Image (cartoon, rainbow, N blue to C red; front, side, top):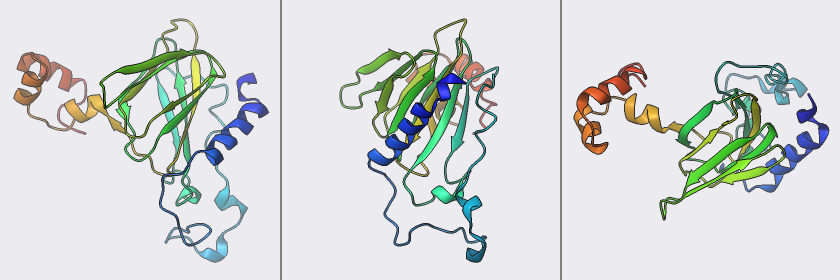
Length: 207
């Protein structure tokens, strides 16, 4: 896959090094999970192979494949993580935020609209980014991505300054966590029946 050229891989590594990490400094070179024998640590511990099948793959809906300390324990304490975002034609990544990190996005293929809301002014800062463009989202800000192209897929490499940046999905947080229907109906100037219909799409009150 041409979009996964050595140049782009090298650029990714540069991004992870240049940006200031968000995790607290650790006193050791790296952290070993409590369930791992230190004497068993070798090159395999520092190797992640979960992205191999993503290259060249097609997905029916938007998909984010995360590589955080949960999926790759060697990242714990290192202040970095990443994600591969795959956008089929016309798909979106709904508004969300990362409370513990900025997000740096590099468009690998296709074209993606990226935007975040300035919490100080309420202004939307958005731009349609073609292949090889780079965009940064400040820490904790509400943001989204969409592939407006109805005929071509897109993919984005996303880097974070934390091994556990966290993700808060705005739709799920509002309509999938049990917030009272009356509170939501008043907040959105609509009726309770409309709120119930929206909640149904998120599995009722389940998170």
